[in-house]
Image (cartoon, rainbow, N blue to C red; front, side, top):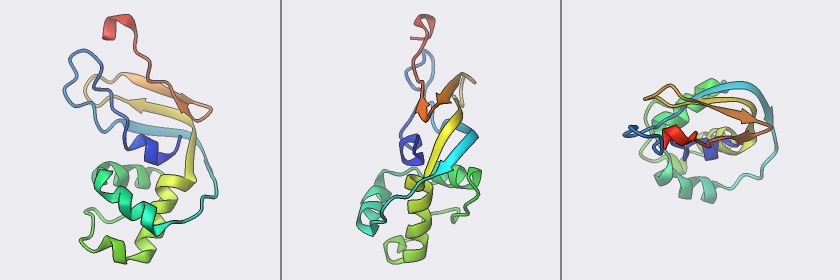
Length: 122
C-alpha cells in the first residue's frame, strides 16, 4: 500500500464513527520501490493531502517533513522529492491501520489494506 493511498483511507463507515481519520499506521514490513518523479503530479496532489497525516506517515518511515505545509512548496524541489519518496516510493507490505475513534484494527497483508467491516459494525 502506497502512503498516498493511506492519506485517503478512513473508517467513517463504522457505526458511530464521526470522522475516522487519520487512521493510526503501524508498519511491520515496508519496501522501497522506484517511481518516476513528477513535480507536476506531486504539486497537483498537494490540495488533496491532509498534511498532518502525511507528516505522521513520513515520521513513521523515517522522513522528516515540516510541521506545516510551506506556502511556496511547489518551488521547493528538495521538499517535493521528499514528499514523492514518502507518498509513492514507500510501499507498506505488512502492518495495520487503527481507527482513531473505536480502536478497530484493519490489517495490511501483502500490501493490501483490508477495510471490510463485520455485519454488526455497519
